[in-house]
Amino acid sequence: MAQSATASTGGDAAALSGDDIALLSDIGGTTQLQDDEATHARIARLIANGFVRRDGERAHHGLKEGLKLTGKAQDYLVSRGAGLNEA
Image 1 (cartoon, rainbow, N blue to C red):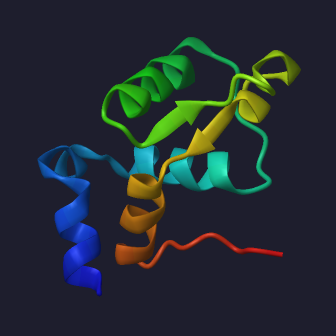
Image 2: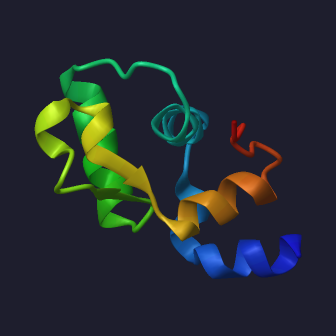
């Protein structure tokens, strides 16, 4: 299973930094996001690489509420052992 999750993330997944992985976890979890230029730049890169998408219905509620992890991001986190807690 881990092999297929890694394969489905594509080559751009190898370029994710520890900070990017932490940000993906924060977006998928309950942690509040920093609203600064560096975070916005990382989010833009994660969106461009297909790990995060904007949720149009909730985008006006705030930075975090307007973002959702894609299946690609969820697979990547699981393959890294950084799965999200689901309540």
